[in-house]
Figure 1 (cartoon, rainbow, N blue to C red):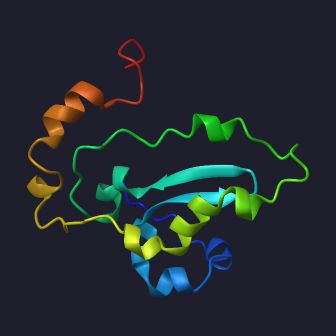
Figure 2 (cartoon, one colour):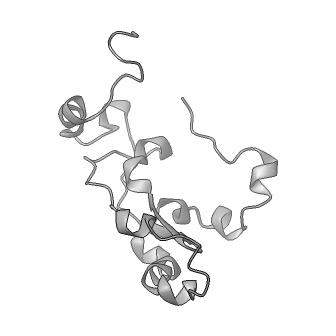
Length: 131
């Protein structure tokens, strides 16, 4: 499997040049804010797909309280409401994850990762019965 989500020229056309000139922007762990919606871009969970060693994942950010907020709040000043998260985005280069390149395939993850993954991960997409 080779991760190539932005090779399609139609997709690339709508992405700002800044993100192709400084590829570190793809690896920041920051919130993405769109009006009433806040989601965390958790690039630290997929480092192997970008050619970096995969550490054991930390618990994902839980924004359940934020997911209850919706656009029905018509008179909300969203930039002010989400100012904390917007500031994190503005300072995104301060949130670049530590990355180690994969030198040989045996080093694709930290030594503790595979035992952790066997317990907590999903090594198969299909259930045991379906396999």
